[in-house]
Amino acid sequence: MIRSDFSAVRLDRRALMLGAASVIALASAGFTLDQALAQRRNGPTEVPVDELMKPVDGLADMVLGPADAKVTIVEYASMTCGHCAAFHKNVFPELKKKYIEPGKARFIMREFPLDNLAAAAAMLARCVGGEKSYPLVETLFATQADWAYVQGNPVPKLFEIAKQAGFTQESFEKCLTDQKLLDQVNAQRARAADQFGISATPSFFINGKKLQGGPTLAAFEEMIDPLLK
Image 1 (cartoon, helix red, strand yellow):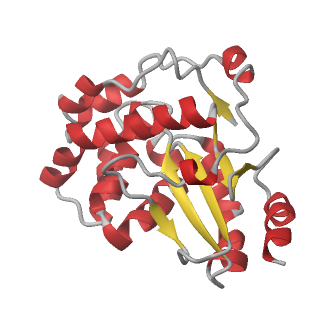
Image 2 (cartoon, rainbow, N blue to C red; image 1 turned 135 degrees about the vertical axis):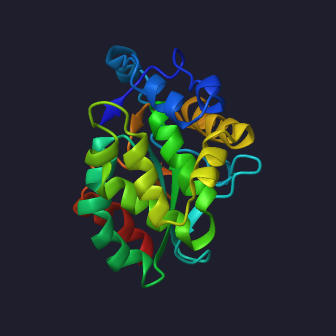
């Protein structure tokens, strides 16, 4: 998992307001990680479900699965987190097949960006809207190595991926300069850190209880299966 000192780092709003190129330039400029502090902030192992289910004002949850499912899985993820990408590529397809598609669980992914580039990618998934949002998330995780860790300016590659979801140059830049949306993403990250003790990505809650250890299918099964009996 990637851990960070969220009390000392804030996504740079001015970078997004200056346009896509500035977002990426700032994203790669010294976003520091404080593992020692994060290890002291493990957070609670269980949180009130009612509080967990409250979305940030104006920021609707991205949900897969039925609202009346017995199990609700909430993930906090960063689009530039390698462990998040590995989960979505290697574990989530089986989790989806076994629990979400049969209607046994619903899955909510919430943004917890670790840097400006992650915020930009999350905003693009939000801006595309509707049923296209989660497929774009999956695509961005699947192609993470192509845009998140490239040498030089990754904006052209990020735009190429966004174009496949229907973005134009104009809508791409409009999304990345949406101050209200950035404020909402910032508020979601701050709430997760302050109220739920999130200090690592990916982090998961299953009916309010935090998944401990690595997000393997076996770990999910151990927590979910008793809830379905």
